[in-house]
Length: 228
Image (cartoon, rainbow, N blue to C red; front, side, top):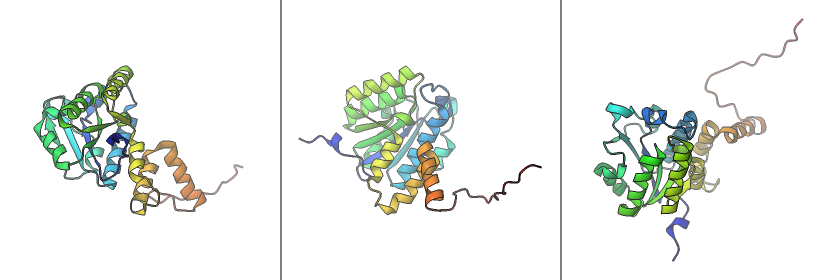
């Protein structure tokens, strides 16, 4: 029998959950640069929106400890409810279980803080009790140390979790550059969030294909004037 884990991720077969992308949780992250973490998280969110992937945002102890979800993440999904919890394990909250079930997708793409606590416990319980497949976005998640993140990833992988990265997920959703309905939006995410890859795309667009530069404001370029 063919394993469902051999199926690539598509816009039709998965959902996304963002767990505890809140400042106090990010303060404790030591496994990845925190600005890179935010960049990757927001990029994954933008990709999910482009492909109309059902998306859940859940938080823990917002008022008493963790603070509000990254504004940049919330702004990708204006008006969307945020599912507040008391438990470190999102699976313990009925709202989260109900939202996962309502989305109707057994493949769940997960990004969250911290890898060794909230991600790990949710992944194991969702697999055991909910029969979900978990795709853990390693570079949109973070742990309190490199070891904490790495060993949590190893533990989850041994249990059957599939490790992925945000760009891998987005390009798996795109799959074919002939899919023009999402091509431009994906390239916009690449140019804004994909580092050297995005810089290369900007260069190719402007220098090779002579497209206008993508900044939104006007700037004059003054010709060189040799000093006298």
